[in-house]
Length: 391
Image (tube, rainbow, N blue to C red):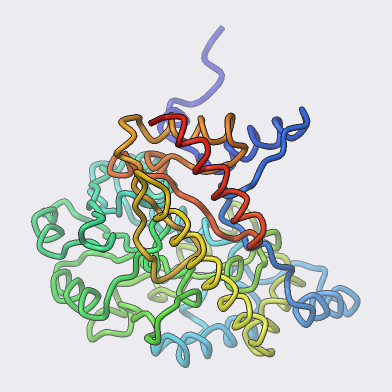
């Protein structure tokens, strides 16, 4: 019998969070109590005004095809948001609405990276970056994010990785899995480094509303000369607790937007109409629910970091954004997957080994604190008890 699958499928990776979630659910089905700190999903409900807008759209005809790049009035709303929030001079011709954030990641790499082209990406970082680079035949080039640098990339080290084959640089700030945030000086230095080198920047800004300092993260597309060489990835899942709605968008040069729209035609046709109208309400309606959610995340972050740092053998930086912590477990002399499996099976705490996000994640675990204070406290007690048995 001939092989059933195309060879390219062997190049495609996965997202471990969903695998661990399935294992945790299986243990729950057997009667085990599990604290879920593995999945990157806000535990809040979508704000009511957004749900109401979707219901209104459904009952008022928004049940048909839309243009592949999205409904023009919604794209214009997004463009206005980008101009006011990210200070990027853009228009609806630069906006493509897609079902979730990942299609912008996938389509941008698929549309621009040729076999053999090099793509620099953060490591530890979101695993789908490397997966898609390999899938299209590109060469993944990791830029390490190190704890001693607050999990920010080192611009001098980045400069050493750029070659004539470099086609794209991926940056993610605030970052998954570390919660690290590039400083404005970092972003400006990156722009100075790549400007004029014909290197596309895919800037994953999906967490840029979930920050705990007083400074809004700087979008590299807002800097001189970068607008024509940047693709911004953003969406609604994290900021508005809309993970199940599958609604994201990209901001990019018009010629790239045309190609991304072409890929939409060949795959999804369009993003559902009523969810787009819900997205419009999310951006234009009250933002009090977002502010409340971020304030609650900050409280949970502080609880999580203080609790982890009180456990012998564990150290954890205070992240400046997202809803993840990335503590150091190297003192236990076990690899990160072993520790993660042990905590799931022995302590009933679901988390992810750091190598789920790349080789430079060895020795670390990722915990999502998108869970209640009560459950976080329960998890911390279980982690301390379980790790005490390893000493």
